Length: 311
Image (cartoon, rainbow, N blue to C red; front, top):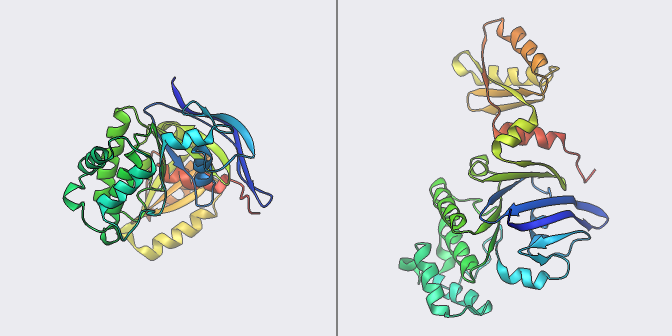
């Protein structure tokens, strides 16, 4: 496997607290790795260490073939990093922003590169529009275009679709998969489980510790969860809320997550969970249906299991 990212034991501390704790990640060329975890779990800090913006306190490895400890400046030149917040100049036009970024990176044939970026991301017709007047989806396109101007080999995306409508998210992911098909490697952090399912592999980090990596199917299987979808007659919200409170106290139930007019009830002890179902279903007041655990179910369970590093 041609590894674009290959790091071991990556660790970072702030004010005596370990925010990234011995994280090891390997990402192949052309792969899209989804980076999952709750807020404050260390995802952004890990990304910043990978692209050379933060020096690890411990650990070793390479990014794009360069040593993360001693060749950080060379890594920065080969990486496209899209931050959580729009970081371009809102009082400049789309074209002016892209031209500025191209100048910063000393992009050869700058005007041609800017024109190509405008065309690729569907921005050509809006080139003179001020960035500050754009909607979230269009700002996202401009930010991605700016990341691609210097032809990076690795794209690091930190929650790139936060606050963006479903249509814009779909278009964004179409671009990401097209780039991966051309050989671009992508590491993307996200809280959207439907986006996680679009990734080739996933890595789940909670409170600084990497808990599991693999495909979506691998992550679900690793959780060991059994799940039922439970509904009440007529979908009465009060009855559903009361049922959720009661089920949360039952031995054998680890998570109870509302999904519309149903509950996802999961546990790691299948026999104990079946016992709960038998007792509750006997009354005929609920409908119990076995289902495959979703990534949402697994996300909640892994977060519950993790030890809070603020404690």
